[in-house]
Amino acid sequence: MRITLILLAGAATGMAASLKRTVLKQHNRARALHGAAKLKWSNELAGIAQSHTNTCVFSHKIDGDYGQNIGWASAASGGDDDAVNEMADMITDAWYGEVSKFTEYGASTPNTARLGEWGHFTQVVWNATTEVGCAYSTCNAGAAHMFICNYSPPGNVGGQYAVNVAPKV
Ligand SMILES: *[C@@H]1O[C@H](CO)[C@@H](O)[C@H](O)[C@H]1NC(C)=O
Image (cartoon, rainbow, N blue to C red; front, side, top):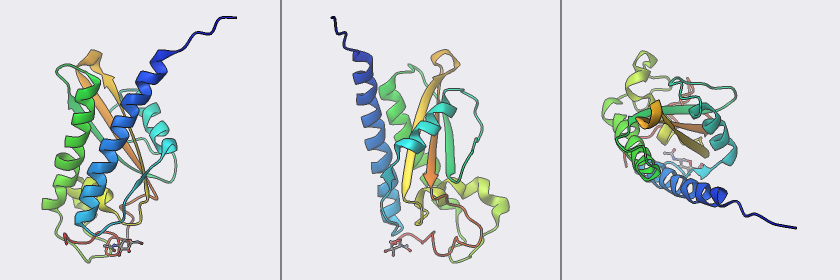
């Protein structure tokens, strides 16, 4: 009997580990600034994210009780290392960066007409969220990466902002 090892699986796992480390580090760093508890990684949420990024359709797709941030990055090389770096920038600059737009701390339901300006930030630091799972895919023939993070329990729940989004400590 011959046994053939499948090396591709090993490579994929290494990249997945790097993505997971980056996602947790950047989320938990941002959350600590707002007194929010650390997130843990969810393979289930990441798997759901992966099945959606694989379509390269840049839109929200929520099929269950979880929250979602999505992003799209133009990628010069399309490489996996670039993608992990882009994920880090997306979390810290694009998503957490919306902190400068949010002013309604203490309101149980802020003006959600402005959700598009700060909704990624409030999900990143939402205290009741305990798990995150993210994925990316290379899209547009290598010209772009699509990113999704799914969150559970979901953030941005009306009536619960005041107890979940604290000002910077
Ligand atoms: C976030 O939740 C943790 C654990 O439930 C709690 O100790 C902490 O005070 C909360 N932080 C905020 C900002 O409410």
